[in-house]
Amino acid sequence: MLSQREFATLLKLTMGRLWDEQLAIPQPQAISIGELSDLPSQTFAHLVICGLIDGELPAYRPDDGLLPDDDRRLLDSKLARSLFPQSQHELDAEPLKLAVALAHVSSAQLFWTQSDEEGRPVARSLFVDEVIQAASLPEPSPLHVRTMPSSHHLADLWQNVQRTASLLPSLASLDRSRASRIVALTHIEEQRSRFFSVATTEAQSEHSHPFVGRILDESVIGVLQPRLPGSPQHPLSASVLEDFARCPFRFFARRVLGLKPLGEGGEELDPLASGRLHHAVLETFFKDRVANRRLPLRADADDRRALDDAVDTVLTDFTQQEHIGHPELLKVRVIRLRSELWRLIEHESKEPPDPDCQPALFEWQFGPLAIAAAHGDEGRMALHIHGIIDRVDLGTGKAVVLDYKAGRRERYQHYLNHELLKTSFQLPLYVAALRADPTLNADRPLHHVTARYYSLRQGRVTRSLDDATMTTLDRETRLQHPDENVAEVAYRLWRRLRDGDFAIAPQTCEGCGLESVCRIGAVTPDSEEDSDESSSASQSAHSTKSTQSSPPSQLSPTRDFIDGDNR
Image (cartoon, rainbow, N blue to C red; front, side, top):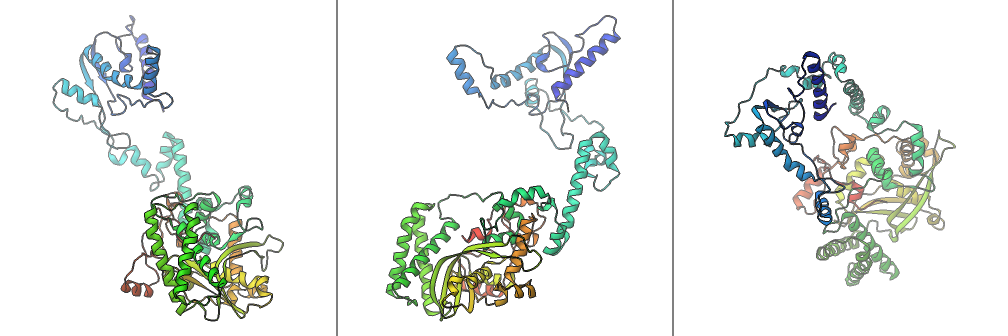
């Protein structure tokens, strides 16, 4: 594609040759073609100026990024001479060039278009307004030029290629690269359409391809292998597995490529830091209660004092290590923290998660727990799981796993009812790890291990996860119930991860902010976000309705980032 200046130069040379060939007595200056600045200082009968479009004539000349006009003027003043041309001078000279050209002609015709080749409107040059004003001319009427019908406009023909395939060969002769690009994009979109039309996750996995996130190149997968979690050196956490289950493509972008939501760094405490603050205070509080033999909780003055001491102790280091925002807003947040945790203590003193168990382990680390294939993958590397369990209450031969959550209890009850072994793996894996830990089963074997989510906001727990078949690592049970056992489902999911299957998951899309990259056509959020304040009537309504659709936020982080649970 030739620029305007290059086309003018070519036309000038061509016309010069034609003139020399046709006239016996050459008159090379009879017709002159070029830029305004190229016109010789002599009188012409006619002047025709074309392309008077805003931004083209006069052309926009941006300031030099390496040596801007301000620096050039400073250098000229220091050197006491004008050595460096300035963009502003060139812009200021453009109207003078037009004035000089108009002063040397008997008549002038100025032309500009009202739309570009794609039919989009364009603005005329400011030169036209200046000429009209200086010459006191009326506003010119549009010159109607007969053009192709709109249905036959070149831009419309390209738009109709997908509906009328016979147009493509003809248009390809005009622009072969554009035609090739359209054919390739059409092929890609046909593959994507087939993928999104499949209803189930299993079928979508069979139809996945690179244009929805599936990596098929074995050499690329080999390069990625060291960065993928699940090995003994780089074990996989339960929350990371859940992130992959919800959307493999989001997992790939965030966990493998390292793309993270930008932290706002505003005046308020961010959700991640708030979650860490809750966890640290509860850990300090319960360790104090264990050390002073003050369990079970009584919600008396001594418990209140211990809570206040725990908050003060944690805040001493917390304010030095975390982004706390505005100190006054933090004070308000701490008042709310004390209120929420005291409500939890009061409720637990009346209704403990399990009356036969008492808090014993806090921020308990396990793993790496090796989960090998039950059948068919003998000799391949086992999946290695690790994690931190917020709290474990122990009793005689039994234990209760408690996983702290920042949201409302109803949301996590929905996970237990509908999302287990689909996108929810934390509680089953925690129970499996506890049952398999030899240090806890040495003296007093655990015959019964259950798990609950603990809503810190409400101070209440969900119903109990009590399913021995789901949480056992026994090989025979895994073979008999492959789809109901967390070890078997987690291992299969991890094999997909290791094989490069990072395809988009439309069914569980939460609006993570990557929609412009994955270009998902439609999303179905799983539940509405919980508000901080709800009336008793709305709580009652929420308990009867597990989910409610709402448009996903383009900026919302993943759910585990919201909860501050990234372990």
